[in-house]
Amino acid sequence: MSRPLFISLDGPKGVGKTTLLEAITKVLRADNKKVIRLCEKKSDPFRKETMALVNRLARNPAQDLELEVCERFADSRAWISRHVLTKQPPDSIILMDRWYPSEAAFRRMVPFAEILQLNIERNVRMPDLHVGVVTAPDISWARAAARTRGLSSTVIHKLEDHVACTSAFEREITDHGWFLCRNEGTIEDATMQVISEIYKVL
Image (cartoon, rainbow, N blue to C red; front, side, top):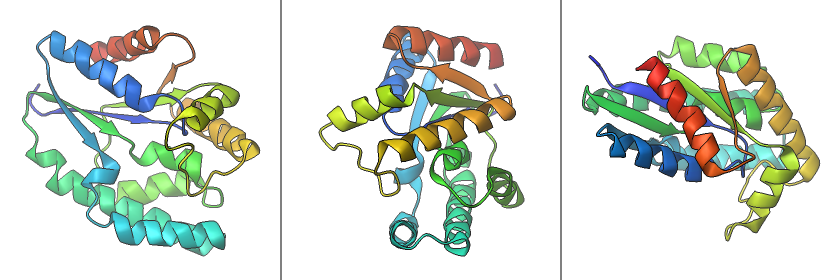
């Protein structure tokens, strides 16, 4: 590889993304691959200000405010693309916890095509492999509710909201031809689904 392989994992709440990331990392490292784990949230220097805006949006939904949120997230990803992704070793595999596909799950008023264009215009790095992780909404809702921190969502508070966000996310992943990983069985099965796709790209 002449540059790092960039892979994003996205999905609604409770789909088991973090557990899956850990399992994928373990398998790749066992095969002597250099894996860099990054998280959009932890890499974003503007996160505090953006989340204040997200909280305002949750209290007072409005399309212009949601667009501003989308623009801020895109600006942050552009910053991460320039200042974080470019610093990674060329022979590594970067696993990113959330990237722009996640917007399809959490935005309600701004069309995803417009969100995608915002990211393209800002030269946000496109993943070499987009992985959309999904489960049936009742499964991921139950998983999220069972966690110590619970659902921990600013924008999703009811099961019907979660059903809608899952449906919207899955539709966009399918429409864009990105890889859809169903994480409803064992973690080993989901892990090998993604590992197989990674080796196809390699």
